[in-house]
Length: 170
Image (cartoon, rainbow, N blue to C red):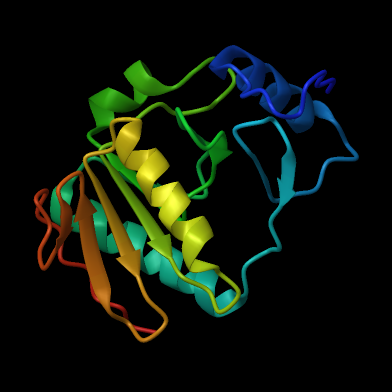
């Protein structure tokens, strides 16, 4: 990876190329994201409870909506680089349309972020804004106390526009 100007935003093509290179590099960390500048952000591996909750949310959403819900899938955003939300959902037929050859996804219908104790509000808000600006219809945020927010372009709502009503069970 070679970035000449660290203040210039990376293009989607550059981010996709760097993501593919990182995936092939045995020295890359297992869990990472790329900022909008192409900077590598190491993400610590989530704990067992967090992983279980991700799996439960994916299962609940897929059961309620059909389609396919997957956790830890890389999403290429317009303003925040490549981010890896906890769960992504789309109708099955959309997966083929929005996935790049390098495995990145553009604008899934639904993204879920499950907060961890070390998450900073500004970083989470930046991700949410990036997902929505990239065409994601709704972001579900599950807080540390189990509170669930459904966030769309027009703000926070008490219920989902897409229909899922996941429950935090851990």
